[in-house]
Length: 100
Image 1: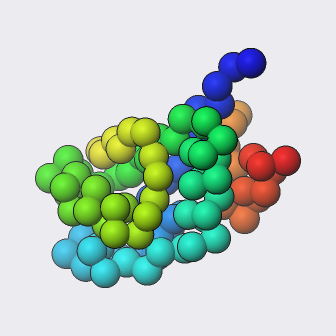
Image 2: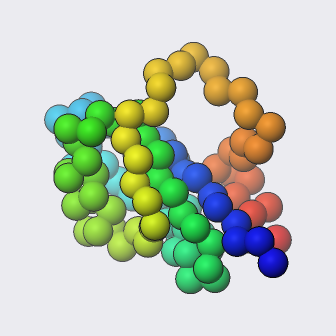
Image 3: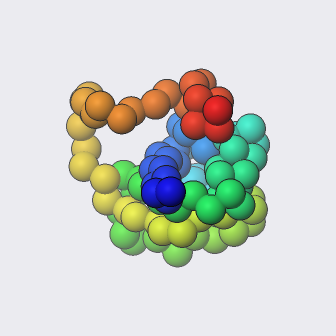
């Protein structure tokens, strides 16, 4: 059986959106974090991918640790875009589809 690799955005998906200097105070979206942790525990590879610059890697890593988010890889510097077109895209509200 192939291991599932699942990529989650950070800002607006697993936490609230905030200005760069206030990201350490972002509020977690616990329902999404619970799903991430469940998938991680089931053996899925969890990749967190964010538009935050690499200069915010440590503060992002700290926030994830403080909020108990389990993951395998944290990547910063997602391209800035107006729309992201992807055949595998899933809206956070549809997260139950991953579990089922």
